[in-house]
Image 1 (cartoon, one colour):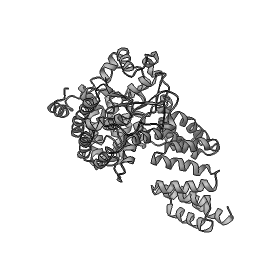
Image 2 (cartoon, rainbow, N blue to C red):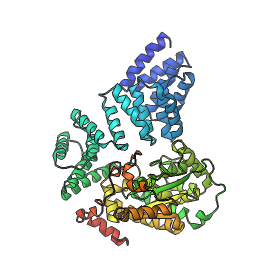
Image 3 (cartoon, rainbow, N blue to C red):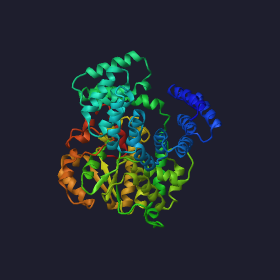
Image 4 (cartoon, rainbow, N blue to C red):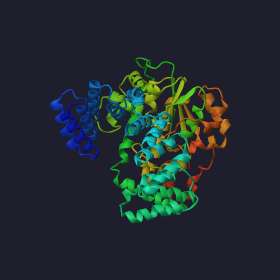
Length: 526
């Protein structure tokens, strides 16, 4: 760069730190006007488009910067970060593999590269990068928080707890860190509860701004067996989220009805034009069901087998349906997408999915995709993958519903913040699963959570037999499985199997009575 471009770039970098994107845009424009083939100009323009949440344009700018100067590790990692917005996980992983050795003196981009790896399910690979970023810049709160989150995923629970305590000592008002800390161990006294309630009293924020504290307090009151206060805070949290969610359950219920209408017996039995061919010798196994019903436990049991790999929770089935449907919408899923997807050659869906997961597949012949929400799309999956395995988790209806009610979710389970919403969805879910059973028969393997935790070896042997896998002792010792787990059950799967979560709902039987009545009226046995 010449001196004039250098000066503009320095001013732009200062503006980036202040998030003054208008100034950065002006600087990038000035650089590119002076020198059209400027890697720095395109890089800065990429940062502007990234901040504006225009990932496709940002990708183009970062790719141009790399074309001009292949040594720009900053452009490479920024590009990887933007690629995963369009689920180009394999391309993002390839970029990080190529440039990771050039990040030795860049804690910012070590942290960003690690976050990309974590976001695409590669937490074991992310961990050393997070560690190195923290060694280079040890007192950066963001880096420390990211290290703590990854520590949970890779099973370093004590280390994560210590980091969260240090972060809270420096910033006691950080709500999510309180929440994350509360999940790591059972509360033995009300010390942390008092800290959090004092924070709520002092901050004067509306309920929807204190949600993480409410959930954390509710969880710790449950640990201390103060059932009334636990439910009080859980309800306050759920009500607060529901008040700002801009969500109608009718959209989900209509989609479920449409799925049953589209995916009928005649549709499923229609022969696909081709069979999937892009990834040979791999059989997917989908572990699915409502969240908090034992899907992670079952995944860990099966993936402890020498012939099985887990790729965690991917969203690539839904992504493939959305992409191949050709429907242009901001919605994650819609009636129009479902109807259009029903007309697609299932080979296209299968290959789109396989191409998207190929970056993470190892040598094992079977791989597990454990996204609970895939129960919605079971018909599409069954038609796309004639040899796929399907394991569906069942749990007592009230325990399943209450476990969801206690959990912070993001996009998939917005119904779970009110008891009425849970009742409506659970009834529709049971009807959908009955529909899938009528179509799939023995292809769908039902596992009951209560039976699994009560008779671990018997149920494990039965499950492995249905999956055409020989029994291995490692499947009984799943808690020794060192694979990362980035689910809400990341902490629990590090323990030996137990039945402590069976019939938990009965401690809240009075508060949950309206839910029980709704389910009973719908013919669901509780």
